[in-house]
Image (tube, rainbow, N blue to C red; front, side, top):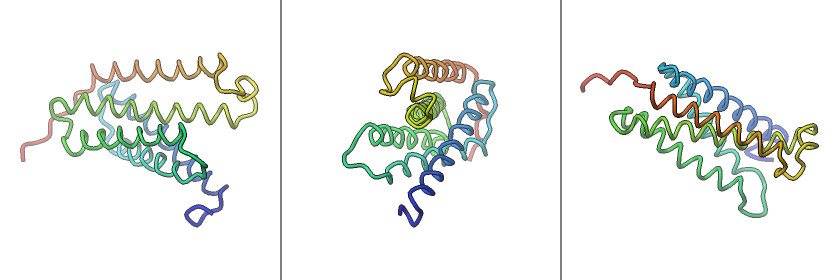
Length: 166
């Protein structure tokens, strides 16, 4: 039992939150790349991605490993993204800081999703059982390239309206 849920139910909840984070994150970054500001979708993305990182720590593990490290990095990146967006309102340097950290948070969630897909989906696992074979590496490189390209485009195009003076 994890947080009062069976292990299977907790895993399903974690996966659902992760998928919500991935989909809303993709929508958020695509919106930034097309110079749109989806406030509600962005809030869902940031909250779901924080929850996905936090719930990942509740899975049983005998030692600290790569999932814990990625989760910790993600939470630090998300803290900066949330501060840049809501604490600093993306003013000045905080606009590119927000864009870069939001894209990194989405990328880390997608990176873990690819790892999990290759571990859990039999057809993918057959292609890369060790997680270091060419199909796995190629998939991760495509995910990284897409994130980098969208991040670059968002940096050039996303210029939300300044907040009104206080």
